[in-house]
Amino acid sequence: MLTSLYIKNYALIDELNVQFNNGLTIITGETGAGKSILLGGLSLVLGKRADLSQVKKSDEKCVIEAIFDIANYNLKALFKSLDLDYDTQTIIRREILPSGKSRAFINDTPATLDHLSMLSSHLIDIHSQHQTLQLTQDDYQFMVIDVLADNTLDLDVYKNQLQGYKSLQNALEKLKQSKAEMIKEYDYNLFLTKELNEIDLESLNLEDLEAQYEQLNNVEVIGEKLGNTKAILNTEDLGAIDQINNAKQELFKISEFGKAYESLSERIVSVGIELDDILAELDQLEDNLITDPQELERVNGKLQIINNLFQKHSVSNLQELIKIKDHLESKISNTENLDNAIAKKEKDIEQLHEALNKICKKIHNKRVSFIPILTTKLETILADLGMPNAKFKIELEPIEQFTAKGKDRLQFLFTANKGTNFNALKKAASGGELSRIMLAIKSILAEYIQLPSIMFDEIDTGVSGEISNKMGEIMKHMSAKMQVFSITHLPQIAAKGDSHYKVYKTDVKDATLTQLKKLDEEERIVEIAQMLGGIDITESALAHAKQLLN
Image (cartoon, rainbow, N blue to C red; front, side, top):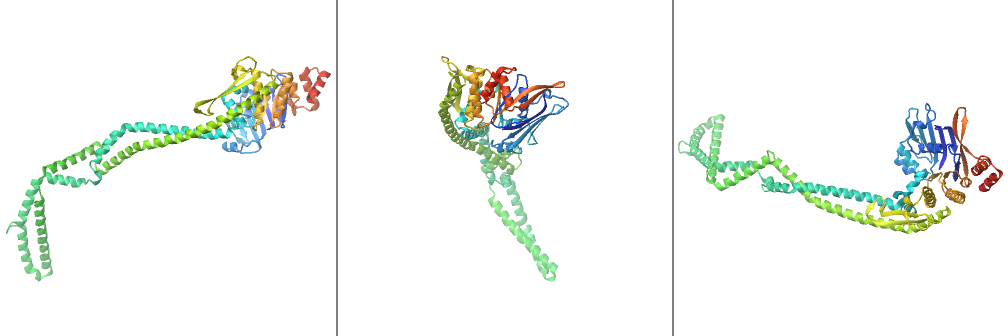
């Protein structure tokens, strides 16, 4: 509830500090006395944008401060989300500097206008003719139905599931787009991978293959050179082996004459053994040497394929070619695995779709069950407010697509008179009728949820007599559970208040100032008498005023 309002240097207000209580608070005053100024100042702490022209003295700071008791509003989570210090006595202050800059504070912590708007929507509801238009909007109509049908928790679950559902749909669409792009390359990548796998790169030794090619390609030269080498080593009397054997015999004869000769003798023996081994290997190589044109063609073709692959993929060795093959296989695997990922996403979406349908059905059924109750309550209250023929037809039509409100289309149809067709509320109801309908809805909502403080700004415009008395009774009834303000011109409503404030103008020196005063019992009698009969108060007006107050 709003417990205190301080305004300094704003419009016609020099300085004003007023305390408020719970219950029904009445604010009266002549037209032009400054009630709108009071609302304008309050609107600034609720997040309205500041205007330097509203500052009374342009060389001084304008300050508006409101104190709210929020102990029963369960707003700790909201304060935490806004990174604000929570206090059951919350102070909201707005300052307009001479420079035109504006500052806002919540419990002495700097705050943005968005912060003010988000918080103030939980603190006070200023109801005016403009706000009455909300009644004709889908969001507000759904809010009314869902609050009364106790759908709040189910809607929170639904909205979270719907967000997940849309995220899955977006992810699925991205997977399908990725698949479409990858499919374009899939066949080509598959061809390249098959081409590389045919070479069996992992088991291939390029050096051995090149050596095999050189041997097959030069078999005649190799055979000739092997034969020549054998002849050099093994020709009788002139061959290297015979010559070494002769040298071996000569050195053996002097090996006993010293270590040096013995060592030379041993070395020449080793050379002889090595030459024998070389000759044996030459014989083996010569025996194994064959001419095979087909094998030469096969090896040459394989080398040509490898070299072509080197050029094709711009690499210079087998290791780089293997890396390319692995990369291509990974892309192919990813493309093939996309089908599994897509199938899983589709299954998840299907399951969540079923869950959404289930909770939407629950929400729909609760709405359907409460619509007759709401219709009856509205028509009963409106009959008391001078609209005995007012009838509502609240239509709830299932739709196929998921929306923020579920799978329903809602429409409030209305007729105020007998013999007239139902029509959309915004077309069928006048401004005055909409105000009374809004009052009826607010009074019904107050029975089900803890509403913020509400300020009715001349909601009684265009009514009088017994209807205004009923309006006052409704506001009085609402004020048993919440703080209610009523800015009114009607004495029947003013008399219902627990507290009564008067807005008036005074001339101080060369300036006109707006003041706000809390009236005592005698002052209330005079104020209501003036509302009944004008400035010249008669005894009958005073008696009527006392009767209303009693």
